[in-house]
Image 1 (spheres, rainbow over the protein chains, first blue to last red):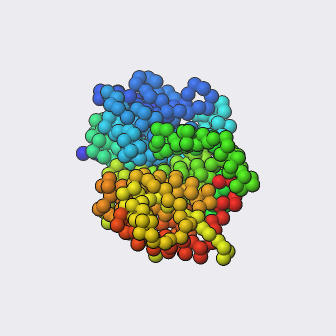
Image 2: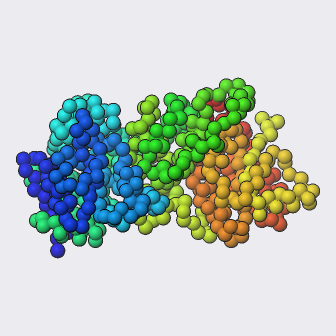
Image 3: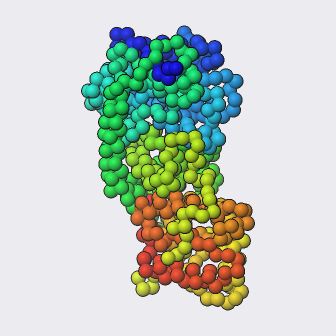
Length: 380
Length: 140
């Protein structure tokens, strides 16, 4: 039985091949809808779309270097209660990993869902992408994947993929039910699709596509990419510790923060229904500000900026998947992701946990035992 | 520096450590007055946010103290507190906050003597460290 199949690519048109593949999926009787990024009729906009009509897939574009939002949130909205139909969701690896975290927090379900992950080529920041895509997003996507898969790198017209993408050691969607492989695959002739779970394997056998073997160069290509990403990541960790290694430096690092909370809104794993920072707890009495100012002589307004970021770190860093949407959302270009990933790396290590890795591993703060972490108890 | 009197914020649980502090008082035990007790129903309700706030407001040390493992009035609140302590130490440790400034202890209701001793020891350790500098910063 085949667990992998090949999708033909004609005239280097990868998007056309994707469209054909998604059409086959959507025409299966038990698949009711497809969640997939598409170019919208609006200029240069690539957004997740929920498609039920197989003829509405003309703008399908899972390869655009655009990452307007982490769609884990969208999938969470779709699956928090039974939908009444099976949905295939086409996501980036970091979207799948964030969604897994949400499922573990009971904010989504994989019950009626089939996760299709595409090898991730990375993405530009929103600002860079919109500037670049302008009138012709399709052309940008085509140039981008030809460059990346042709070994010419991710840089285009002076812009490059975000730091979050460069530091991402998970470009392969290992947690998906179905993986569409691009790295180490001869994409001139075809895309390589592999079933990773019983759900995915079952689906693959019903597609009527020719069976395929894992391309021999795939493992090496992935290994080289992950090594490059990991090296970038580790350097980023070191640089960030240098730049934000004390409370003073944190205050400096976040000195442009205006408490807009965009980073929290954009964060796929900031899971609270209502953030404490928008409740009355932080709607301070006017006299309180004067008291604070009198004590220190001067306070920066708005207050509670470092406090906000540290609290967010304490609340969500064990679930951080490093997607970089926090940096993407910052109106003042604070490199938020760098600090969050650096800190999260340590907090996840402390609990031997890796965010988004599996549905089985319980989130560190919802699991506990009688005898553990004795080293944090006591005064000696 | 010799005259430095640290401020220590202590989150103590209603059932064990607060009762121990009460016992220390009624037993007329003497311990330093640097500690400000905040009674909470359980250490399991101490959000990391409270600890962060205490440090950013200039507390020189924070103590979280509750029932021994197995003794929690709410069965497992102290286990949750211990995980959160592991987490917050990991975060604050990366920001140069010394380990001695943040403590978790188990002090049972009948341990008045141990409560007084713990406070004495923490105060002496923090006196040796010196003041927490954040209290002089304008942007936190």
